[in-house]
Image (cartoon, rainbow, N blue to C red):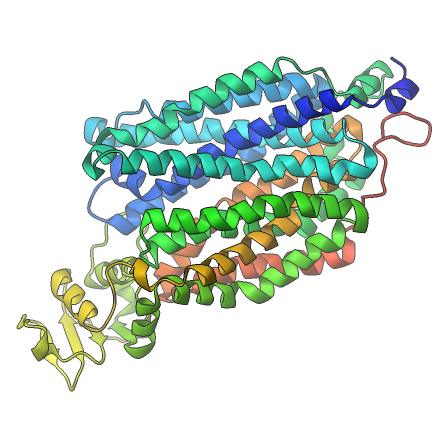
Length: 560
């Protein structure tokens, strides 16, 4: 095949459907694993990490999850290099196999109760292997589809890779929900949690079967036959300032915004509803499911729209709207799903007066001081509290508007104020039961009441978050493919995408929940994605090029 004939030849409709299906299955698999782990993060924390601090175990499970994202850039480099030298088809056949084995392996692991800390180590190793595979999967899928798609429909066809992430979520939520409702909670915690991971073997078998039928990308094949390939794609991608500059523009001007908007809408919102707003897992699943049904169509719509109006300003609009609306939208969401909690936070604002030396944030260990224990208790209860620094070694926890005499408690260490509960705590002994009783008396609910939820308003808030993610997520695959030349495309686009999604986006839930624990403000964690989307908008508005008009070939018919 000559370069010219490679450029003129277009795949048949049947071939294109197979290409899109094969690439999209990898995305389904990737996000199935992602959401299964994410929805079970709190449970996995209790199974694989030491007991005694639920908040710390939850954060550790998120950190282990994030560790897989930390190695995604390494996977992007290794598999990107392989894809640019050996070929797209064989590389992402390897990545999906490794990804599937690592995912299913979690279902076979012993727990902390069985073998101690070795269980956590084994979980970490599997998450690292899964992260390496994902690092190479997306770049291969995006490149492979784009190199088959007609130029004027590239955004549309690559958007299916993005949209099928929602199918992965649907499958994960459905499987987890069926497992949890078809057995007792004790049985699910004992062995039922393994089923969602083990079922990934079915997805793996189907994915490998379909990908074995694929042929190499015609653009890549023509490039190789014409002798235009790169022998050292990593050096040519990042050791060459002309291309490295484009990589940096892609990273700061598009990828980081996409990373935080996607994870905020699809993952953080779900964890936030369950772990801050105390929404039951099934209600949280149903709310997010309803929004994502709409979101799946929006991803394809914005991919299609980017073929007509361009990709740059759709992505920049998403970042700007994200920076401006995340705070009010999460306030609306909180009010919609747990109005009692919001009313209590407003009517009875809690204050915590303590020596800062005793209030250091604990993430990787059990809380020891009274202040650390109270912070963990309040954060888990969704209580928005104000910290007041003092040189006194006594800790004062004040819950205003509660008459201690009416709670039926006469515990030692509590001073009766005029309508306030004031707990005076010295050392590490914290009367947790009594504090919870007084929080309940102040109107802080232990769980969100489904009967009081404003479901239409909650779905509308979640749909807005999903729309913002879709506006940048739909066009970005085509944008990244068009930004780089064929000989180093796989390597060049994989690294900025995986750094942003792995380190900037993947750690977003962990960072945001840590900020909430540190500040006592249940909305403070949103300043992280707001800051990132603001940076992305400012950078991209000035430096990001428009790519929708670009051919994947240069003027003489050779791949760019």
